[in-house]
Length: 344
Ligand code: ADP
Image 1: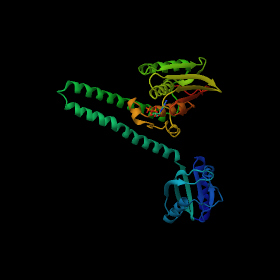
Image 2: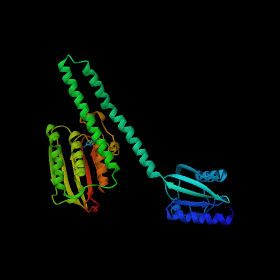
Image 3: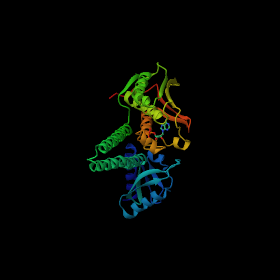
Image 4: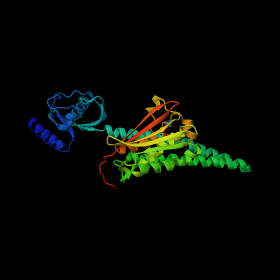
């Protein structure tokens, strides 16, 4: 292809790729960019500049040498951004030493892949313990058929492990659903104080068992658009934790206020508290400060991850203030001026 034809090909290709919103540049035989789409500039690739990123230069050289299209996926530095960007880069020779280079930002796709992989690895690990216990108990039960008391004991342990397994699976499904959702479904205007009373009722039994007092101070006028079930789940999880991580006979408080366009729900306990290092991690999936205590209370390590997703999906936030030995305060904020997204 002669120089004139190459120039024309480059112009047409870049025009098409510009219309498609693709990051694309054409480099000449000296690796200077002769054409660039506007999206390419976001990657720090600008017309009349030399291509300097080593991985991209190597890719361009390879395409030129082999006279065929080449692609590579990896992290590159892009103009002005501190973190590297994970890209899929493709290079195609278009004549006279010129090469068309396109870049696709795959950072988010890669992050999602990693999250998914981690999640699956964590799930397998978490399910192994109760499944192992069930199988062991069933085996022991088989060998104890002539001892009625032992049968009763093993059967009740078996049931406890089965319930625990069911609970983990239910929370995993709940969290996957929340993570997959791009928008909150079933939004409806609701009086938040009523929703909180409902959440308090859901934890009443476990509070009674531990002789805990539940004290509420709720602004009855706060009303906003939420997914009722999701927000009730979030508040129930916070109340359950406040009860579970406190000594018997204590008190758990919940308040609701409206502050600067946000509904602020605060759950306070005077329980075991959480050390500063752990506070940064408790919203991660499967993270538990004290796994044996969490196991005792039937905890899955997913409760706060679920709360966090529900808060974020509603445009809100969750934060914690805590001192070991003194207690914890969890604050859930939800914007009052919610957008009127489509209700499913
Ligand atoms: P779990 O099912 O183990 O309770 P969560 O995700 O709800 O999982 O909480 C993660 C961890 O954070 C818990 O295992 C516990 O160590 C800690 N935690 C959560 N809430 C409280 C609280 N109110 N007081 C003390 N520790 C808490």
